[in-house]
Length: 78
Image (cartoon, helix red, strand yellow):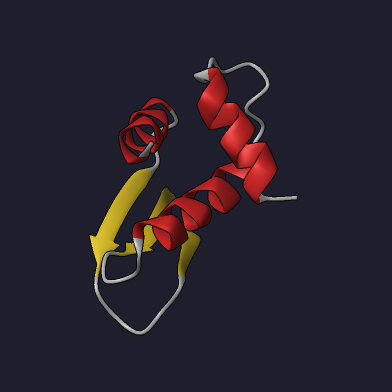
């Protein structure tokens, strides 16, 4: 699933930053570039939830998503 999120971020020109620290992760914009920062020291389930939440707030209606990825985004953000 992480690979599918990485592919989606490439399609949307969003840079994923995998780093360690004392933070949860999330979306931000810096110098007109969108980023999603992922804490690589957190469990994979938490990293996937951060990604799902970040993409949930974007209009993906005109983008093809693998059905399992679209379902995951909707399911996690309920």
